[in-house]
Length: 130
Image (cartoon, rainbow, N blue to C red):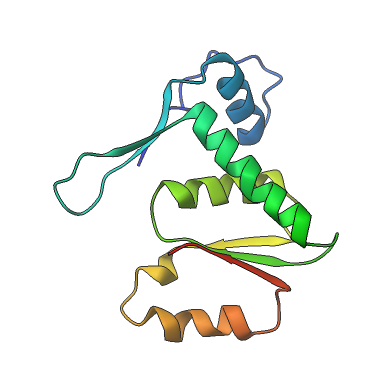
């Protein structure tokens, strides 16, 4: 993945990645934030700062709608731009409440590897995208 956040003309008030994402979404909404290269020869998928911010906020809104304060949620996403939105959701919420997994979904027997996370009783909610 290619990240455009590295060189920043953002003000010093953007102390976190979430602050920086929201500043870029407001100031440079159509600039590419990330590109994802798949294993095949297809063209890279690109996500703008505005689209990434909107996707992360949508996932966070879903969590707020279905989760009570203090509930734990597990976000399962395959590698790609959707995972990035889930990751930024993780950064923007209480880190003790949301976990984001991706590498388990790439492995050979994903079902067996995901079961302890899903059925381990540690989470009240599961958000998955396959």
